[in-house]
Structures are given as structure tokens and as C-alpha cells.
Length: 261
Image (tube, rainbow, N blue to C red; front, side, top):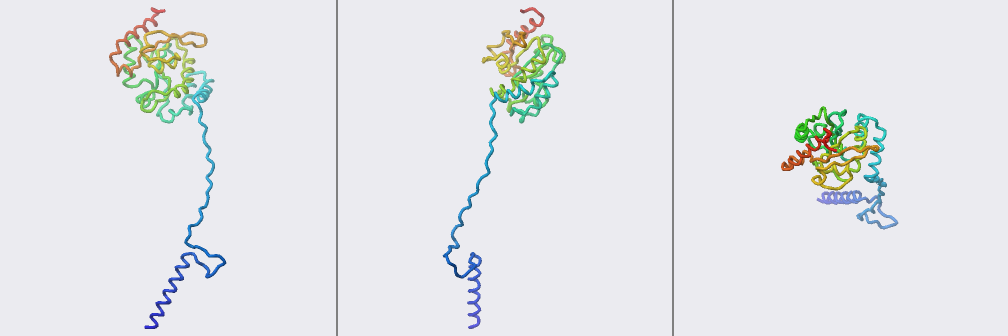
């Protein structure tokens, strides 16, 4: 029995020594008393410097947009320049860059506000329901999209959720439509919607106040007649306004036929 007790004591001593070793004790004595269970001092890690990307103002980006299209001498070159432009956040969210549709050799230019969901899916302005109503409206005064007029928008990219474009987005994209007008050289412009009317006429007003009257757009010393009109999307939501739209279309027809000054 004495041997068993001695054996157990030896096991206890060995286990005790192993516990010290596991705790980090590697010598019996030392010059300093060490607390092996104290928390290790925190190591200070210096973070790498963060390089912030400068935030450019809409006016600055608009100047870049104007520079990007300044040397374009054709609609084909303009389309390529706009498609390649990466300064507008809308471009990153849109499926397509919506440039134009209709006859580029016609003399009547229709300018809408911004592409809608159907436009972004199909890659053309005024697609599907809105486009069908637009074609019916102008077909009623003898004009066909494929032959008699040309359509585009203030913005070439769809705002998410079909929301109204922000003033900053309009500022950035305005050089594109101004160059578009310059290269197309229209003899008559129809502005479809409040965003389009306010952007081109450089005013602030509701489309219900701006419509029904002729305005001028100056291009290289030449005054181009401009007529604001309800956007097809508005007419689909407000069918009571179709009477005013019909009278406006008759006004446009009379101007084309030379029956109004």
C-alpha cells in the first residue's frame, strides 16, 4: 500500500509541474516576481492611412461632360461619347444608355424628361405604352416617328424607380442634350414634360403653366421655335388633360404648316 501512495504522490507532483509548464513557467527562480496570469499589454496597431476620393461638384462633372462631347461632329460620335462617359452615377444603375429614336434626317425634335423602365429595357426612348401614346398623338396630326420626327431625352439614363431627375443629375447631363440639339439642327422643338421644358428654357415652372405657348431656343444666333407639351406619362395618369394636349397638337400642326407666326 505504501508503494501505491508513493506512486500517487509522484503522479500528483508530475501533474502539478505540468500545470506550471502549461502556464508558462520555465524556470524555478528569477530576479523578478512575475504574474503569469496578468493580461498581456495591448499591442498598438497603426491603421493604414485612408485615402478619400474627392467629391466632385455637379458643375465640375458637367464641365467634364461638356469636354467629353465638345469635339463630336456627328450624332454617331455623340452617342459613343455619351455611352463612354462615367461621370454620372445613373449610368452605373441603368441597363442601357438611351440615345434617340426616329428619323435623324427630320427637322422636328422631341425631347422628353428621362427614360422610363420600358425604355431602359428596350434601349430606346418612348417605348411600349408611353411610346404608343406618343405615336398616336403625333399620328393624329399626320406625323410618324420613323419619317417625320426624332425623339430623345434630357437624361440618357433612367433614374431608379422612375423618379424625377435631381437638379444635380440634370446639371451633369445638360451638356449632352445641348450638343444633341446643336448636331441635329432642328427647325422645331417639342419639349415633353416639365423637366424637359425647365431645362431647355432655363426656367422654373409647372408644365401646366408653360404649355400652350411658343418659346424660343437660341442656337448659334438662330432662334428655334419651342413648344412645351404634356408628357405621355402624365396624360396616362391625367386623362382629363388630353383635351389641352389635343389643342396643343393642333397648334404645333398649324406652325408646321406655316399657319402661325
